[in-house]
Image (cartoon, rainbow, N blue to C red; front, side):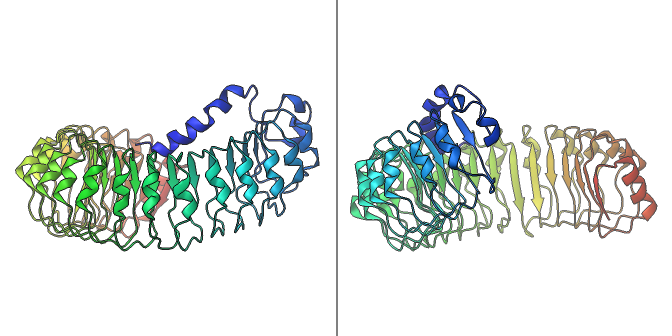
Length: 479
């Protein structure tokens, strides 16, 4: 699912697209042939160029100077009176001049990956500035003048803020805010003033508790709180009734509140690598949910209500001690991606055969000893991952999965591959390392699109390997 932040940036730049009458120039020499006709100039990773001629581009609207090892802001940029977008990311800038206020038409300013620890107060003079991206620098403060602007997207992630920059709570036009990977911070009471936010990222900030004030942001659609340290979610999470994506991966959450079922707009719920012991029955009350990511938790069962998630397309359950599955799993008719795994699984769950739309299937680190003959019912499979099991053979019906492009069956006990594998004409990648194979069927040579063949830690003769390399000269063949 495309994030709303992409939409924000797109809307901020769409007006530029209409004014860009020529394509982007990537050569300064070529652009100087007719500088007045140049509207977009991208001189990225060109450390040897001189900036003296920049002032000749009197109609320039977009300038990108990424990765040019710039240490001092080129003053010639200040003469570009029509400039709307300036990207100086991945350089060595330590400061910006106060004179940047001369760029009156500037809408987008990107300063990521520099050495900047403060911004000039004169930024507040850039009345048209709409997007400010200055992540991965050394910022520990923001100028008060930013509150004068109507910035809609601010990215100050991966910086050195030791407390929440108070000025941000006064930037009430914000629709997107990225503060991930800073120091632990407490959100102030006036954070609720940011009631236009639709995208918020506070991930990797070592937060000890879920910031409940977030639940007072009525327009929020995407919320990222991954890689923090909180253990529970407040019931007030249900106030975010427009939320479509909630990322809580890599926390210490042990349970979800029953109120989670009131979040009727939710499309994606990510809880990978937490401490969940069970799911509330109300999880089945999410009518629009399409992606549910629950890998690496401590779930030993699922509620029967999960079968009510009739629009679910992707379900991740690997590395959970699941022993049984509810009968209602058979009702998940729209699943296209399903991953399970763990040593509590010792047979192929029959309900999987009812997932007629399934495209990707993973059953890993389990104790599977065989696949059912009926696996051919999964006719839409393009990828199957069966690593770290106890499979000794594959049924001939496996070769009826004609859409397969990727097969992972490494670290099993396979002694042979069925001759009919040559029927899998769409196959691109075949991973069979760490088995007990001594040979391969000759039909494998008839698969036209093989690009990767992994056979390491088997006992296959070198003659067979050489024949594969000769038949597939552009493929990666490992032994």
